[in-house]
Image (cartoon, rainbow, N blue to C red; front, side, top):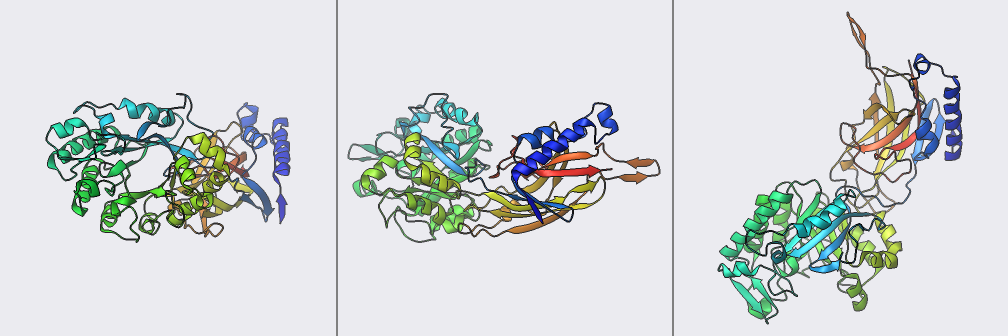
Length: 512
């Protein structure tokens, strides 16, 4: 078996293209000045995804992971544009600055008090959310939200008009006012707000997730700082009612609760409230990564084991500067939290470029594991294929990330001509990438798939033989993963991207 490196491949591709241009592969289409393939633009200008080898009339590509960050659905870094206080952490960014230099940034996270969004009953300041959201959506990123009803730095995180309407509230040393989470007036007003918010954002394809944030300090689901002061506490049924409000209105968007709904430092894997959330399709996030020094760097990685096989788990590390002062920041532990939780999302919880500059090494390592990473080990196809006749393409796939590809999808092989035109689309729907297993780094299991295809098959009838127009010639073969109709969805960790998430493998020749 003879292997060919990229340089040799490109040289031969250029020679083949020159031969076509000189008329060595004459066809009536060339005589009519109509392209018959050749792949001049695609193969000559782009490196293939990996080294290729030839054996017995078949070509095998061995794609090489380039190690770069991927921005894909249901995963990535989420940047706190608002972290409760509006000045943290997007306030110093110019309107045109979406921190494109932060590798793997896939979503902007907007966490604000309820009072800022509905300062008067029925009067909504959506501009507060939509303005930063549109900046990132324009760049192909997602947005996520939390609206809180309790803050440690703001007296009325729940709007004052809610209490004026008769809702119960409890003063905490004159610093802030906590609502009665089981008060019927409070619940009525929360439901009206969530209804309005869902009308605007539920099912929006640009919204990654929405936190259930109207319960507990900072919307984290705990009252450990307040109940000892005012003496009021709330139990499981009140937490369930808050989840139910969101479930009634957000029916198409991923919801999540903080792990602290179960207790901010309660060890264990299963709790009644998180079981309830899981049963209703609500995932978890842990906002406590590296808040405390080791060995209390986090408490609920065992809790995540129920969730991650089915739903994306979200992590938020402590404000980076605070963690440095407290001595709780540890780069290796940050990566370990991604591994232990099988996390799909990790926060950027500080001034983003400061975090990047001082932690670039670990950010790059996290990007090779965070979420999912679809990585074919090999793809094998025939050098020559006769149109209308059956042939096979075999491939071996792995997911080298820590979490499943929740959206699922299928491998696709696309033939393109010299102008980048799509000549044939071949979807292997026998392998759903959602089923690729995950494992420790370097141990991802592989799944083999082999599918038979026909390009422009013939249909014979007494009226004649019919087939779609498809010309013989040499074409570029691209690999992608996505929808069952061949639409690419996922970025793969390879060079040779055609700009539409298809990756150059090599050449294939179609004959009459």
